[in-house]
Image 1 (cartoon, rainbow, N blue to C red):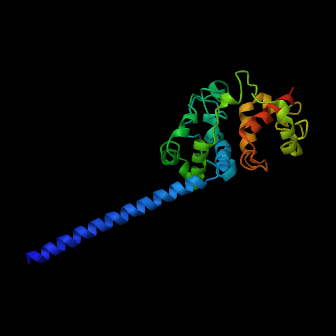
Image 2 (image 1 turned 45 degrees about the horizontal axis):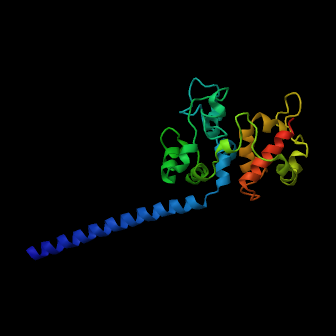
Image 3 (image 1 turned 90 degrees about the vertical axis):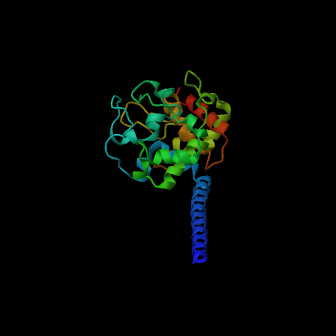
Length: 252
């Protein structure tokens, strides 16, 4: 009888170890699947989602984002855009949005690029960000990929006077080859603010908001056919800066 109990005990112990092994194996497999999916996520799509995910997904979040300050000036769907708090320059209240109609006092995401992908995904999915109620896990991984691998130091692109630090001479042929067919050689073929006096095209935007301009040069514009010159055209970072520098000459 005692031998039978001992046999049952050994069997249950073995079964327990087996279940733990299966559980750990499953957890490891899921974790590796997450990491694998993270590696192949589309950084360009992440940048576009960062820009304006409601436009891309067609989702209409209700009310203001829970983290958007009640004292700030925007409302509704625009408060859910990542860029609205963290800025086109990714440094939030330390950068272009340290004052003006977009001021929130919220920090940027530039420092977050060194955080673990899994931690960023969790923060964006849950907590007060709450993006999982509107975005799929894959779409959130897209944004994580952009945060970790798509950001660039804005101080290497634009000086304290909001002037680009590249070469207009080198930027001109790049602009003519990749941008002029849609925007025109003079930059005014498309008017970004058609209801206002005068044409406000590429040159106007490059001078008025070079931070937004370089983001869109790099990654494209949500809801349009504008390509990412980094992801789609395989241009270098310095090429994008040179295009911005030349674009600013079109607004003078």
